[in-house]
Length: 98
Image 1 (cartoon, rainbow, N blue to C red):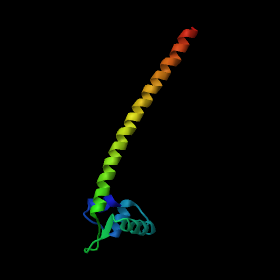
Image 2 (cartoon, one colour):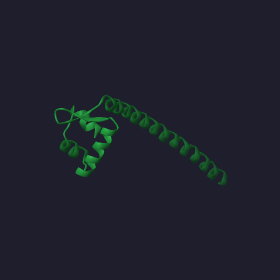
Image 3 (cartoon, rainbow, N blue to C red):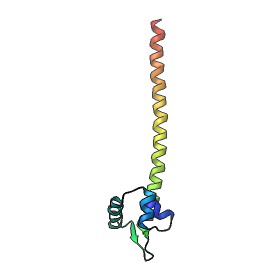
Image 4 (spheres, rainbow, N blue to C red):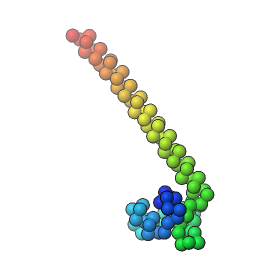
């Protein structure tokens, strides 16, 4: 929802609802939560806009997501190395048995 508002420099309820693929009930609930958290405000143009706190949140979330992706890639690499080591041990046992 924050991204929808950010990408459009403000957005009305129906635009947020359709782009975020939310029901009307969920949209209203989430909008209230975001306003109470200080991430969104209702602008004078009849659109919801990001607050400075909302912009900071989006930036920090983006950085966090990037870091998580890097960690996941690293963990996948470590998992491959572990499997290679396990395979080396398993293959060594097979050779010893022959």
